[in-house]
Amino acid sequence: QVQLVESGGGLVQAGASLRLSCVASGLAVSTYAMGWFRQGPGKEREFVATVTLSNGRTYYADSVKGRFTISRDNAKNSVRLQMNSLKPEDTAVYYCAAALDDTSNLRYTPAYKYWGQGTQVTVSS
Image 1 (tube, helix red, strand yellow):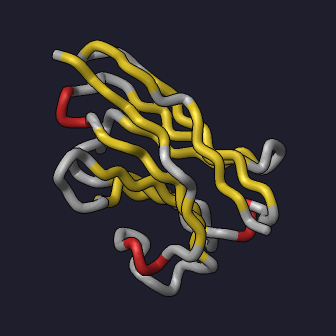
Image 2: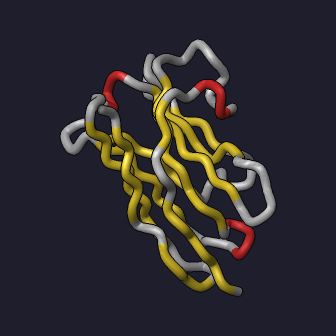
Image 3: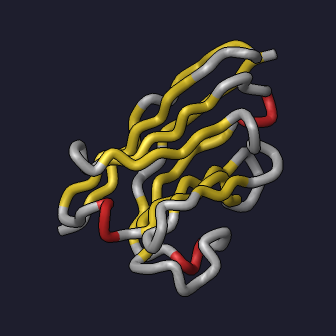
């Protein structure tokens, strides 16, 4: 049984940093493309960042580029999202996801087979 469990969310002030972690069981993150998405209040789930399976390249949404960093830790079978210079508009539930390969556009939710339950990030102004 595959499980992705996110942690590290919380309430912070604008300008602060948080590091989200996604620990996988039932799959090896080294054999999947991994991504982070978020869903703000009243909004659709949107792409945040991904690390590809084939070559480990990373891609980011324009809104987080330069502030967020995705990384894969194969030894801990986890994926992290380092979030710096947080803004109130980053407030959302953040989800970790795993895709079987890179053949689909990893910026879109249908590319991913497994999802975590999400962790809340709230940034106050």
